[in-house]
Image (cartoon, rainbow, N blue to C red; front, side, top):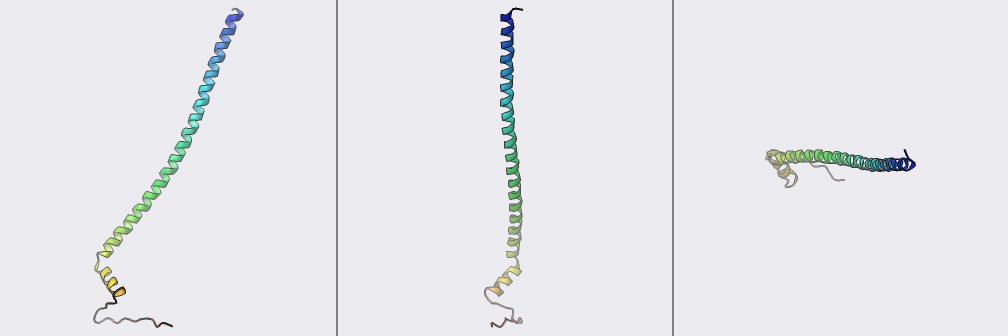
Length: 98
């Protein structure tokens, strides 16, 4: 082989190697970015799961409160505490203020 052909072959090999290395570098950067995004999304998912759980619990508490407010016990408690009403035979004891 002549020196020119050898140089041309070496230049082609070097060019291909540089292109492959550049491609690998770009791919490595993209992989790192994707891993970071995945990590961010997992953190956000955990946060949203916690919010969902909190809201489900809050909804349950509101349902319980609504059920209580529909009961006769609630009406009786409000009548006693806010309006001072009592049953005919009921005696109320109050603490003496000092």
